[in-house]
Image 1 (cartoon, rainbow, N blue to C red):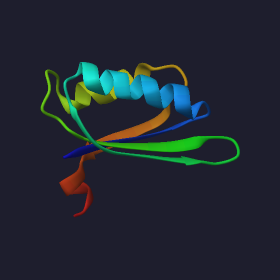
Image 2: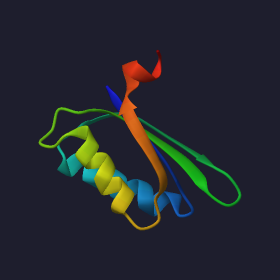
Image 3: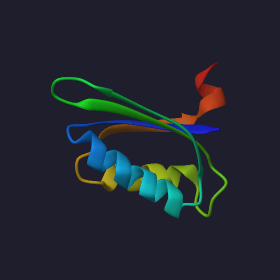
Length: 81
């Protein structure tokens, strides 16, 4: 399983765009969390990378989206080490 995190000041629209890109990549969604603060939100998307592109490619797509800041991601099992 993999994850991506990012910050944004327009969380709902950006989350929908990120999930659309996840679907276009053919990945399986396993979890979403969004924590809103007064000036921005932090989003985490957990997914299974069983699609047509590499997880790194999907992260690069997120980084290019206007309104998304500080993208990070990787393998969830490596995160627990």
